[in-house]
Image (cartoon, rainbow, N blue to C red):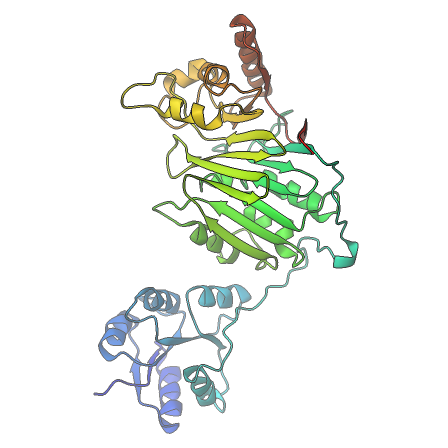
Length: 442
């Protein structure tokens, strides 16, 4: 037969035959498929102009059919109407995420059904996913409430640690002076804010910004990689849900998933922690190892870290100060012809005013966990002085299984090593919401 105008996929004979008859009466050629497992072969064989598919069917769901068609270069031009009695907003959102052109709720109006199909085929129907409205959406800042100026003076830099722990196997039920939130650090000047990683610590930072304590219209979020503890809080960052903000998300693609795919899964997937689609303007910047001038006098540099998956180390140069963020980076301490990471990283971060670096393990524990992607204490301290020539060292990505006493000892051991070796180095192990001020050039 000639290529049909429409293929209908519905396991319910009554609904499927009714839909076919309505469209046939309207002058369309129609194929009805009642076995969903035959849907894709039939689509490929007949190449229709439009697919009308139910969601809930045995074998393969309408969402799977939609995703398969829109992921195939030879098929993605085919328009799709998803028809379902599942009228939840999240299901509509998923349908549009997988490429549907229209979502039609069952039971549909038999008098307007053929006109809906005509409208879709002619390309005049909007295909925008619905906004999800929730009672406890993050606070919105009105334009007339915005405090345009930062509370910082020209030349001042404020670095705040909002989370610095790794993600434990179990949620902790004990208090800690160091906190339990995962990786997030903000760097603020009078004009700009840069956020490094979006672990759970970013949630509190978002509240602070949304409550007017600090305000920047443009927010830069630099993700080191996509391990869960570094992106878990991104979907609950309050400024994302305020149209007054522009959010710029920076990161490296990984062979398993791109930065765009991570953002899409975070903001639009029904499995994400978000409760509504973003309202801020969002830009995605997929970067490699390179130097980027974000603004006059503000440079962001990136280098691949010694850590599983595509992971970045960032260096931010602003107001004459150099801040390095390397939360997941294994320094081996023994360069060879086959391993020159220590030397390369040392050159990249040399002269850092603040070196924020992975120090997950005590020396004893590192001996048991070598070459898994995280550093031990002594090699980090030595690296900070001998290769990085840093002024301050911030021990980061604190082991989530360590108690406060063990973390206190880790810091004490670091400072003891610094004293014993005669190093000139300030060393810190930060607590949540701890702030460090730097005076840069005006």
